[in-house]
Amino acid sequence: MFIQNLNLINFRSYPALSITFPPQGALLEGLNGAGKTNLLESIHLLCTGRSQRPVSRADMISHGEESAFAEGEFCGTGGGAVTASIGFSRDKKLVMRRGGEEVRSYSDWFGERPVVSFGTDDLELVYGAPETRRKFLDMLICQMDRGYLGTLTKYRRNLACRNALLGKTGDPAQFEVYEHAMAAAGAEVVFRRAEAAGELCAAANDFYACISNGGESITIEYIPKYKYDLTTTSEWQNVYLNSLAERRPRDAELMYTSQGPHRDDLRFLLNGRPAKSYASQGQCRSFALSLKLGSVLLLERHKGDSMIFLIDDAVSELDPERTSRVYPLLEGRGQIFIATPRCQVKLGDGMMRCRVEPGKVIIP
Ligand SMILES: Nc1ncnc2c1ncn2[C@@H]1O[C@H](COP(=O)(O)OP(=O)(O)OP(=O)(O)O)[C@@H](O)[C@H]1O
Ligand SMILES: [Mg+2]
Image 1 (cartoon, rainbow, N blue to C red):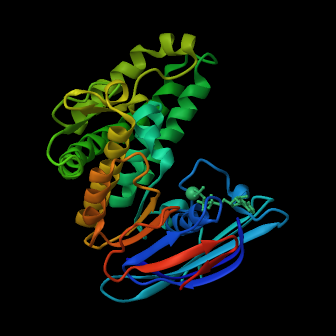
Image 2: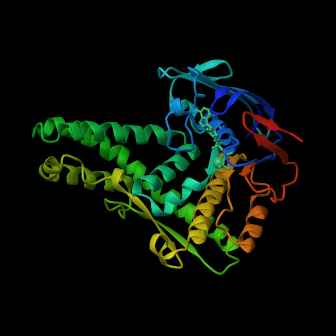
Image 3: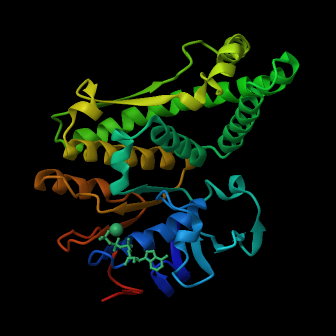
């Protein structure tokens, strides 16, 4: 899958933009503040319905305008094209269309146009809160397996209902409805995450070994708040269900559900030590980049198609040796967009070189 045409109206710094990309992608060069990240953001939005940054939709509407519109023509590697568009306004109206038909739910939107983004914020994967790592893993699985988003939503919805009951009632019958649904969905979430984390660990470690020239290794461990080393999902489900019932009085005091997949984490190790406290900035960036490269590989494997990889200033903080080893790893990894304020980046075969200036993209 790749994006062939992109049209923007009142999207951040672009009053109007229309551009055609080759299947290999583009190098977006430009000064700070030129609009490179904004352009990547519009592609991410079309693929997932969300920005890659923690911002609201209204932030993406050009200042002084009431609404924004983004449209992309996406082509499958094996042929066939589909147009996806998103229009949204400050009063929270949102219209998503695919092939002219309105799409009403994110679960129908998500995962069809797989995308991975890597940017400066991704150091948060190493340094940030468990929620950042959970979201990263969940987003990867959602794109690999479109049913997973529904399972995750079911878990979260029932968790919210259980939390709302805590401290209000002790009636077991009321809790049981939500706890049964949480245990069934939670079992799937936990086993799916553990499986994906294992697969990602192997793939990311191969990339990290290349970037560090074989001198270092990384490990990704899935750390469930609630034990998952039970052999089957049904076994996990029963044990978790009992635990939820047992913990009701304690959870009522805390006013939240203290155990379950919503509290899980991933542990990142560099040479067997916690990356967060041991790794240097450049090593952390290499770690995060390897996680993203590993994600691309997993998506390719599971979707049987190439995907879009958005890379925002990948090599800042990397030394020249690591930098020289990163770009060859990207070659042939789907449609790649690289945004950089530096101009010495070597272009992959077939990639288009663009100069980004405020409000426009110039193709020399
Ligand atoms: N909603 C908006 N409306 C209009 N302009 C916006 C909006 N949001 C951001 N901008 C402008 O977009 C520019 C930033 O764009 P962007 O983040 O894409 O830059 P960049 O090329 O990635 O820069 P850098 O190299 O520093 O990362 C800023 O000039 C900012 O004022
Ligand atoms: Mg930027």
